[in-house]
Image 1 (spheres, one colour):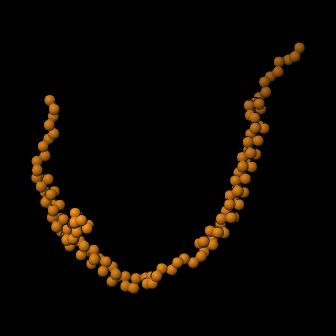
Image 2 (spheres, rainbow, N blue to C red):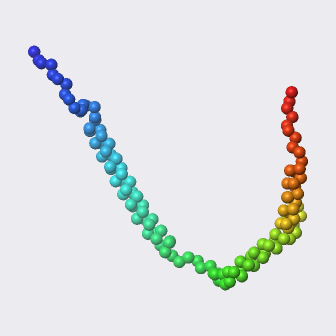
Image 3 (spheres, rainbow, N blue to C red):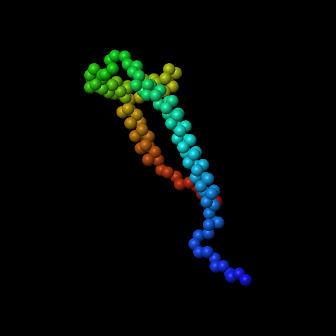
Length: 128
């Protein structure tokens, strides 16, 4: 008669497919190495061209490239904008839209807001 064998203690070796884990690991390593090699080859072909493009001289803008007198230019710009804000003019060729002075626009807006504030608001009617 054979004696009853005691169950082995520790991990169950049949529960882990060692061979499958190793094969998947090797496949992943090969894919990672292949991707690195492909990326290296692509960068070797494109990187030198990129460096040449970056290193080539750019087009030089026409003279004068700098403002001769920045403060004077800024003052002229501000004066031009102030004239626009203080003048009446048509903004389109069909004379549909007009530009009015900013002070006049503020007065009109303030009057409209005051009129709307004075008007009593009626509560909405409830349907029976």
